[in-house]
Length: 245
Length: 245
View (cartoon, rainbow over the protein chains, first blue to last red):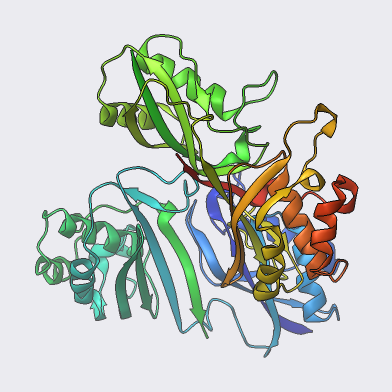
C-alpha cells in the first residue's frame, strides 16, 4: 500500500469549498470522482483543511492510500486530463505511511487579495475583494504586526467556543504589500481557527476606515469575544497559498 | 448635441465579440441597452473596432452623440452600476463634433498572452492560450521584428482578398517578453486586417516549433497568400490593449 501526497490548485468560484456536501458541488467531490476513475477503486482522501465556499487555493494538499502502481508523473497527467479546467494537479510524491495531509501539517500560509480602485477590474470578479477607498499598505502592515505571535484567537473565530478547544494559535508573519492596484495580505500560522483570516482582514479594514485604532487590536485579542472584532471579509479574496510539512 | 468618448474594458469570455449579432450576446448589445436606460434615448454607438468572439479588451473606445447633460464622471458611475461585472466603464470625455471612435483612430496596440507551462493555471481559463512546450521569448522577439514596417499583409488576413481593399499596414513595434510563465506579445500598427494578430502569432509559434525559420517570414509576407502563413492562434489570448487618437 502506497501513501501519496498530491498538490492541486483550484479556482473556488464554482465550488462550495473543499469538503463534500449534500446538494452543492465541492472540490473534493470532483477530485474524488476523477481519481477513483483513474485508480479503479474507492479512495479515502485526506485534505489539508476545509476551505469555505468561494475560497481559492494556489496550493492544496491531499494524501491518500492506494495499491495502484501508476508513477506519480503519470497520475498528474491523468488527473489534468480528467479534472475540469478550474482544478489543476500540480505535483505528486510518495510519502511515508504515517503521513497525513491534515495532521502532518506544520503551518499554512494564506493570502488575501483586495482590488483597490474606484472602478472594478472586469477580469477579477470573484478572484479579489473589490474595495473602493484608497488603502495605505504600510499602515495596514504596521497594524497587522499586532497579530504576530502566540495568542488566543477566540475573538477571531466564528464558531461557538463552548466546546473549549484550544483557541491558541501562533501567527509567524503577517505582511501587507501593494502592487499596482492589488493589496495583498500574506499571513502564516501554525493553524487557523474557523474564519480567522477573514476576520483579521475585516478588522484591519476597520483600522483603515478609522473605526478602530491599531492599538485596539491587542485589546480585541484579549477580550476573547467575537463581537469585539471587525466583520468577516468576503471569501472571494482568500487563497490557501502554501502548506508546510 | 455633445459628442462623447467612453473607454471600457471587458472580459470577452461571455460575449461573441463587440458587434451586435442575431442569436448571440455581444458587448455592444449589453452596453447599448444599459447606456440607453441611463440617457433615456436611442444611441448610435461608434466602436473603435470589431473584436472576435472570446477576445478581450483592456481598452475599448466608443463614441456617441447625446443631448443629455449628465457630467462625464456621473455617466461612468451610472454605467458601472448598470453594466455586468465583466464590463467596466473606465473613462469618459467630451470630444469635438467630428470625432469618430473608429475613423479618428491613428493606431492600436494588441497584446496576446500565452501561459507557457506543462500544467494549466486554473485561474486563467479563457484568458490566455495554454501552450505546453517551452517558448524562448528572445528568439520569438527576434522573429517578430520581420513584421515591423510597412507591408502588404494579405498572407495574414482571413477574408477573401478579391475586394482589392488596401492590404498595406504599418507595424510600429512588435515585442515579445516573458515573465513568470506568461509570454506576452505586444504589437502596435496603424491598423490590422481581419485576424492579422492571431495569424502572426500562429506563424511565430510555427517558428518556435522549428516548422518555419525566422527568415521564412519575409517570404510569407511577399507571397500575399494566406495559405503560406501559420494557423490562426486561439482568440482567448488576445486583448485590445490601447487605442491611439
